[in-house]
Length: 135
View 1 (tube, rainbow, N blue to C red):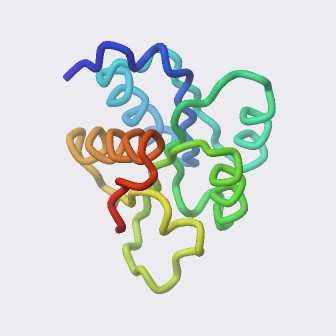
View 2 (view 1 turned 180 degrees about the vertical axis):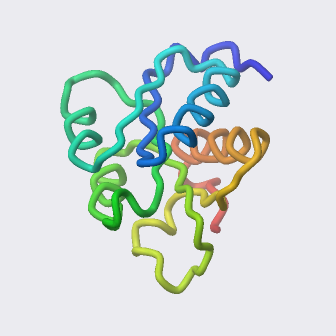
């Protein structure tokens, strides 16, 4: 399903240390209409991508990157007002960082529909914060 103006909203930043999962997410988001999809396999690469001056319309962030928590990155995304989708292989809500609750959460392995729906929710929530679903 193609969103007509998805490519006009800026780039998508995928933060995922498993390259095959990142490439699958890239294809799924391109199918949604995002032409500029970038992959960061470390938290350092993600921070660098956020600071390079190019607009980031959406981030898709694995909760654990290289054994490290993505909590600082999530806090930075929230501060910058960048909508995000969190992906995780462990769905226990108890261990989620505080900023994680501001973003849609998708369990791995996820389907194309799951990721696209979460991306739409994240983008919709960023446009209308008062109407955002509480997850």
